[in-house]
Amino acid sequence: MFEARPINRQNQTIERIWRGVFLAMTLVLVIPVLVILGVLVVRGGPMISWAFLTTEPTNGMTEGGVLPALLGTIALVLVALIASVPVGVAAAVYLSEYAADNWLTRTINLAIINLAGVPSIVHALFGLGAFVLFFQFGTSILAASLTLAVMALPVVIVSTRESLQAVPMAFREACWNMGATRWQTIRTVVLPNSISGILTGVILEVSRTAGETAPIMFTGAAFFLPFLPQSVYDQTMALSLHLFVISTQVPGVPDGLPYGVALVLVGIVLLMNSVSIAFRTWLRGRKKW
Amino acid sequence: MAPTPPDDHASDRRNLDWYVDRGMRWIVTVGGVSAIVFIIGIFAFVTREGFPFLFDGFEAGEFFGSPAWRPTSEPNPTYGALALIAGTASVTGLAVLSAVPFSLGAAIYIAEFATGRTREVLKVLVELLAAIPSVVWGFIGLSMMNPLIIAIFDVPVGLNVLNAGLILGLMAAPIMTTIAEDALKAVPDAYREAGEAMGATRWQVTMRVVLPAAKNGLMAAVLLGVGRGFGETMAVLMASGHSINLPTSPFDSVRALTATIAAELGETAVGSEHYQALFTLGMLLFAVTFSINLAADLFVRGVRRG
Image (cartoon, rainbow over all chains, first blue to last red; front, side):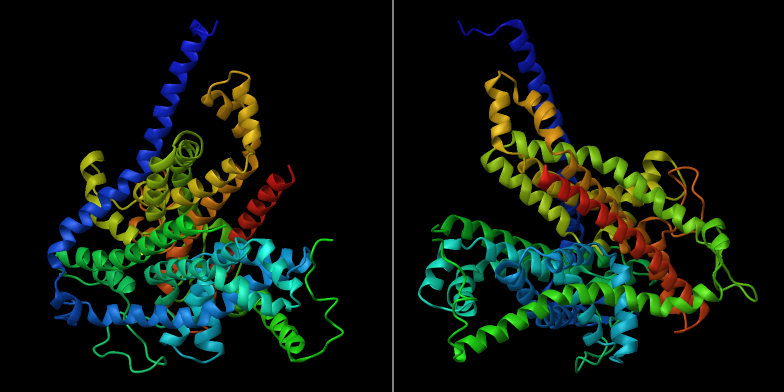
């Protein structure tokens, strides 16, 4: 009664062919990543040593290590985190816990989408106009980090909002029924139950921010500095800009050096990303509700 | 009765907790509104620096009609952005053409065909693709794609529309894939089950049921990919050759709007005409990406209603 008729067999063949086509399309996207990572490791790997990470660039940036750029990137990311996480989490708490479905909420959501879509070079123009010139921070770590913070804000808001909304409504209702205020409920029930999700988003933000180049070019990152920054009002070198500079602006750079810098940068970014992905997978397995 | 938040019925006991609650509500509202403040701030500050140029050196006919971008020529600098617009358009166009089919194909495979571990691994790889910083993509264009294009097509320079377009395609692909996959997942399973219960194969269900139901979301995915390519800076600066050209073939070097700002802003004096002209390019970029995002949002909203 149920044996396959020719039309069924034909359909199954079509199905198998298209399945193969879609798989091939997916592989076209993912294989380049593996190739690129492979080449970076093979060509940049020999450059990486303890000395490469802990010495300064010498001889017109054609030799030596990446220490000031590495420390600069860490400083820029840290200050950007300090500035963006509190604001982003507050915004997410508002959107998830307080906001009614009205024009203000819709406008905020639209602003977040647009903030995420503004080109990085326009963020750079904003940072220059606002933080460097108008607020007179000068070209400094502070100005560059604040520019990065504005750029990263939508990432923090969206990921935090998602983890807040993943907390079941019944948890809140139980707490309200005990007579707790909205804020007491958020502090004692909602935030503790979503803290790991929020952290995942913050780690993701670190990975994005560390790789940005355009927004820091004119706001605080320098091509080359012979000393380490002493305060947030100093300029700094950064890994991303360093890679741009030695691969386009400096003559006589040996072949392997930019690969080494690229590998360090990609290493940091992918390490942070993998931590974030692993954390998320672990959380999903552990969820009790 | 369903439990309600205590906002209303607790207002009769104005103790410390009540005031703390009001204070925190006020603080997080400020956090939420800050997103609006920042987007207006970006518009205001970019406009503020570029505004004097709009009244003084700016001529719409020259700006949009002339390919001569010679801001440093003395005594008559010209500010024709046509070649820059053409550069951005050609690179973004090639990126979208190359990335859309593969991104949608990948989204369909991940959402409709792949299962279990394969699906997770593919999703992680797509995420890693999205994580590679733009300056590293530029470096890849410079150091890997450039010799490859020279060798394969036998052209003198490998930094051109083809190079930057393919790099941008790879950069825009993960965004399109992720959003398209979300759009496919938003189609209720009941649709698929109804299709399969009628004896349709998965391919038939995908083509005739899932794709039509998700078409607005897919459109939004493509638009956001376009926005990403349009606004990309470092990769285009490094891979496109950065020479002012009205491209006639994919092997011509071009210069993009974003790349022009990145390359020239450092050399201009604050407040000079050239400096203001670069901010005017920024205003153009802001206006276009704003429209693209708005359009994408309208498409997504269409999905939610439908």
